[in-house]
Image (cartoon, rainbow, N blue to C red; front, top):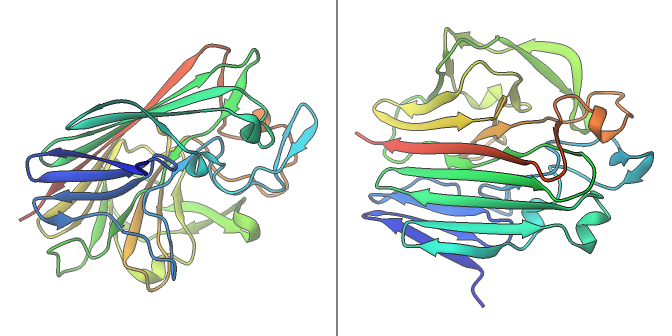
Length: 286
């Protein structure tokens, strides 16, 4: 039984694992762009996040009952099935089961479409509430890219397509979001990347940008977003990757003890309602 599927277009190809529908590699004309994972630092490559993004204070509460839902939810651990496949695209799906209901007591369906061109990779996520009551949820993309980028030798930057606030939340112990802010050294729309920036994730909540570019010289990786409201940048000290993250929600605020539906930034789907979220990654090398 296969545990992954490949898609290709010309000299570009990508591999997606069925566990978590996680992108495991993306190569464009010989340039290997995605972090392959390393158990010694960060073992993942590009996990999907659902039905929460970030840490919870002590699980979640629904209708007064506690459920032990942890960091980034559970969808990255679910086995997806292949719904449709063509040489350059694949659709994968996962649904609620008896295990997921012990963590998140709602019936849902999620499918994700991966499509590749000669220099782009597109992800389109659909979340469907199959329950009889409104369903709170958050979804996120967490791809890690090689830093330095293939063929790049100079300094790297992230450039947003709109002005962003230079003050971002301080992350408290346990991954909780505090009201305290810290400054990041933005130069207009440009952030010069250095390892010492990343004592914790840089979380641009309610971002103005719908695209950003991770670049060095003429080597540019561009991320364009549709229906994501938060952007985060993250790495680990000494690791050779940078995560370009897109979120609809975020970690619990410090002291939060309410219902999941009352958590800041959660989306609410009515019974039978579907939500769509998408991202396109494009690569341009000198």
